[in-house]
Length: 62
Image 1 (cartoon, helix red, strand yellow):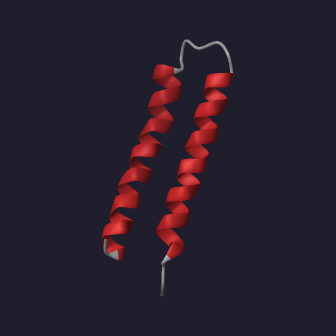
Image 2 (image 1 turned 90 degrees about the horizontal axis):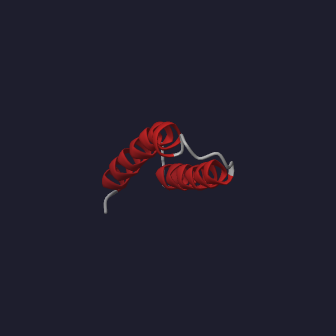
Image 3 (image 1 turned 30 degrees about the vertical axis):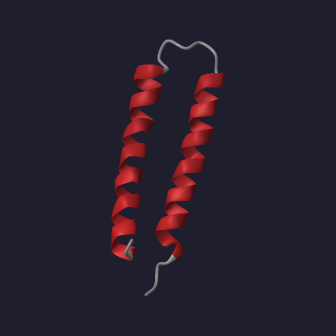
């Protein structure tokens, strides 16, 4: 894939993750009393976001 295509895909995936950051805690995890579900979600979310941002800026050149 070209650099522009990779950037576009990363930004779309990042936007989807940001949407999930609102949907999952307030919709899917609303009735979960244990903190384990939220902890797992935010851990995986954080790692995915860090990975996408690292991929996005890995080949960033001025």
